[in-house]
Image 1 (cartoon, rainbow, N blue to C red):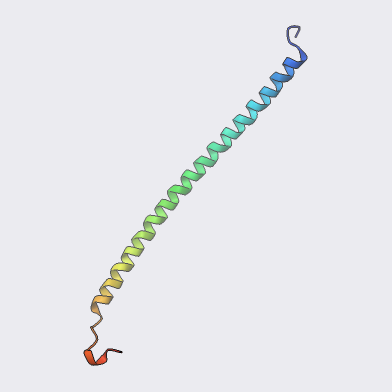
Image 2 (cartoon, rainbow, N blue to C red):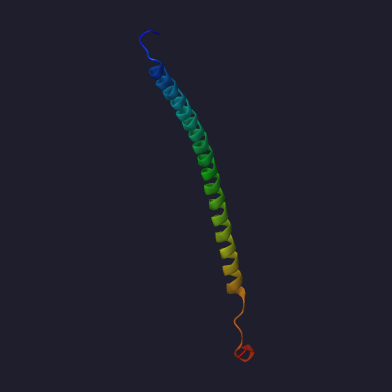
Length: 78
């Protein structure tokens, strides 16, 4: 390699190492992003299920409250 200086070769090697690390980091971030998307989808589904359960419980409690007789005037606690 008569046209390249030792410093230039060293710079190319450093650049190559940095590019490799950057590529590894990008791949790692892609994997993490995919995992987070799956987790978000799962949590969204779980949230919808829990909202449905709360709504059902609310409806059941509402029906029970409507069926409780009103206290008589002499039964009220002062």
